[in-house]
Image (cartoon, rainbow, N blue to C red; front, side, top):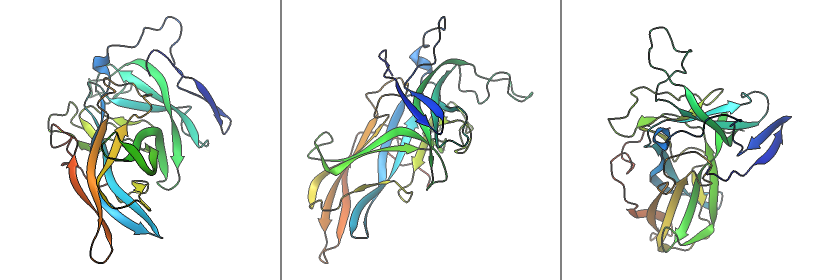
Length: 278
């Protein structure tokens, strides 16, 4: 969030959640330099696939979120994950990309981080289909016509939550060589600097509904990370990637999707050429 904070209160399972509230107290230093912030960016969506299921038509796809900033995107639950189906997600701005909080690292480890600043930015919500916890409002999936900013078609404007993990390195020069975030069940979630989290097109929820959409050659699947702007990051203007596709029918009347273009991308990782299935 920027200087203006929108605060709302949610009660879930007896837990009071102050969504959007800062944890700053009187006398606490202001937020540190944004050089230590993550930079959240959408990898060009891949594996577009047209699926006909129970008389409905869906576009399924893989979606990746990269962190190209100077620090990790680190989120912790508060109160800790327990019996309530929802809890606060606190974003930490850390002093380094080290894996361990200072004072908790093993004796043989010298590198550690301190928490310089923290703020409530979202919620952790239990996802029964995936059987783990998701961070809410992580991405927005839309289908536009005419251009990436054209009219949203088919009622498709789907905001989604993810379990955020270090899945693969964006490029070979990632600041951290080992995964820091790997657990969707009890503790921290996030994406380390230089890493990507990716959900494969076969995963539940990786879809938009195209039922009844006419054939055309100027449709755009648009994916935006941090769509509400709540997460702290270096640059909120570079969060969107898109794929242009044609929707057509073959001689048997079966409909299909053909990718014809995508948004500019400066590396194989950002172009979606290095993902692993998940």
